[in-house]
Length: 509
Image (cartoon, rainbow, N blue to C red; front, side, top):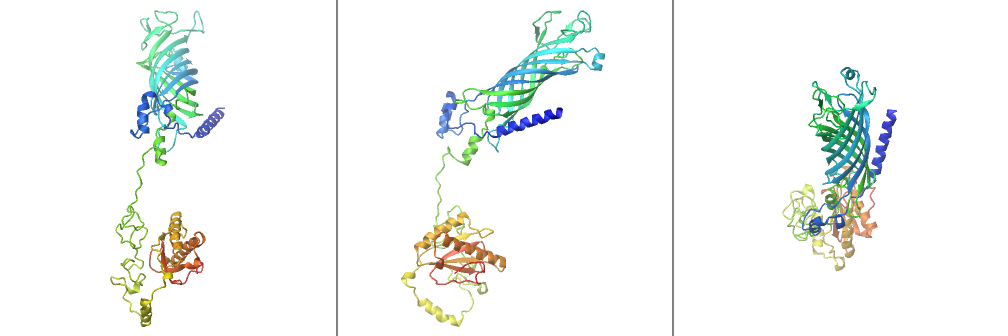
């Protein structure tokens, strides 16, 4: 039977949590001044006008609670499980702290065990009425990793004024088996003792003592509330009330310095009260970090400075990211703003008269020309080329074209596609220019294959997505260079200059 009860309670908690998880609102709109009190409006207006960094605290609803549960007296006589009921009113002071006042009534009883019977303890019945004022601290209202809480975990402490009426079972006499009002332990001198009380009152007198004892109490407890909706929540709470400075007759028995205290385990249905059009939910249901993180994620209030991206050397790489902020005007640079050195001979391309010098011809002179002897057969060709001028219609003024960066694959990123789209505009505007698409590889076959696939991805994008004629794109392979880069270079050449032959899986013309 007990296991079924535990299963039922667990199912109820899961249901409550699932309902609570459906709540996704942020609590309130910081622009809504209708939820700010007149007293706090000056501060909030300064905040709205960016003259003060902190918004005003909004007005929030009160919480009216109704609870019932199990109570008992923890003392010297073995207690039975009693019953209690409570009604409370709670108001938030901040998102963490709140204050709650309440009226609680408890019906308790106890029957001594064999030892208690042997030392003279008697069965008892007790009624306690409690007026309390407690401070509650919510432990999970503030979070840096979620929005508003769906549960409210809290601890409490406070003061209560208690009135208790205790009756004990008659051992016999005029009312055998019945109960009589207990006025306190009879001391050896025959007097009644009510140590720890403020006063006694109400009911018939006996030895100048009344039926109710009034005493101070210290409240301590903890609870958890599950949000059902923006108006209702269900809570489970354990609360203890300790007599102060100490009253030991709640079980009609005094023994040593063992002061009795009350235990109350309750289930509570809480209702938010107040006009929801002018008040937000109680603040313990609102995460005060909501505004901060939403503003960081999507700024709507902060004054954003105008974005300035200076490029002093006009190489297309802004100064914030330019590792060579003083590149000569017109010099081709990589994505970091550094002048390109295609063959890695130490002479940047804008100075290099032999951009693709073979390593076997290193070192090079100041013009980037290698030390390999020039074949005799080429001298005549160089003389012809030195005096040859291309027809005006073939002049290529396409200017600098970008380098495309890849990671560990041959797939074009969105950033690379945007760069190619910009380059395509230049290519279309210069119909006399052909474009070298230069890939780099190493002696590794897999690296060479990846290089060809990257070049092919660039050509395919320019042809299929940007409408560039495939005949204008020249497939070029270079042994030395950044294997993760494919360079574009304007040219008037009529055919490809590929070393080695294209990979068989790559379509090229």
